Length: 368
Image (cartoon, rainbow, N blue to C red; front, side):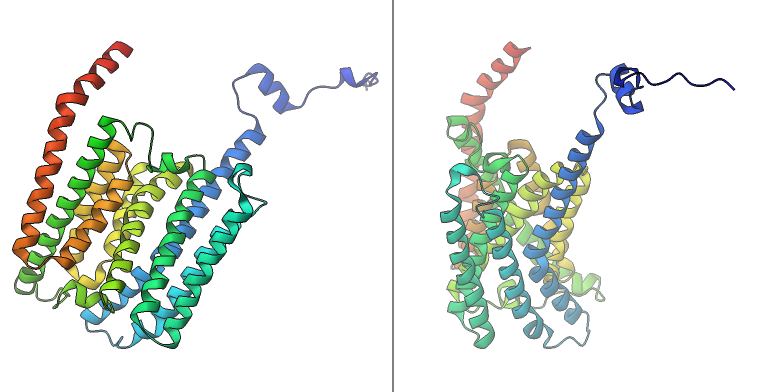
């Protein structure tokens, strides 16, 4: 049997298979690079799951209980027994998570991490303290303070997660490049007007379904009272606080954060849009079957965001409509306000076509 030649030095050692493959194919990614990419994608997916959990645990569970009650299930008293504790847990989890992201070990060097962490902890203490006070004694003040503080934490958390996954606030749609130009300001007015009018149309469709479904399909559960009464607001201050939370949760989270984090996780666009629409409808199941009308608002919000990349006008338009619907002295007044917003948005669109669209078209043609 022939003996193998002796090994005279390290230069005679055959390279590993992976090294030979990379030498033959220089463009082939190395195994560590693929591992880092997979880790980043998995971290983005994990962050998205956690963000949706702390944001929508309360709305979805509360709506599921109300939907079960509309369907005749014996769930009387479940909301009062479950939701206050769930609010406390979600507020505490949001504050703890954000404090970890802004801690000196993980914060950006130029962001004054200690000051930011102390600000987060202060806001978290306020949110958790208000939630505990609401457990001890139900009241409008503690409920509103808890909702406002949690909304601040949630909006801040979305920004920090966008930074963590390479998008940043501007990539999320908050003051993106070009937002302060004439075209950017006109686009913001258009997006605001579109969201306001679509929200108005969605609510009108829900009201129509509430009136017609009991006659057409009596077996379907339908809310038999006003939407505000079903939400159980303690007063106007509590209403404003919850409207602000709703605007941040449904637009900043379900539209902006879902798309940004979902793309970082490598998820397909259709799945992310379906997830956002599903959670939006699930959070409105307290309306019964008419809650499916939220697909209209959710779809338009996603289309506007994908087309223009503007998140702030989405949130503001949603919040302003909800406040207008609550404070409107009559249905006729709300109709007038919606028509006025439609005129303003249409005027902004006409101005954008006249002044900005030709310049954009010329720039793209020159680029080709």
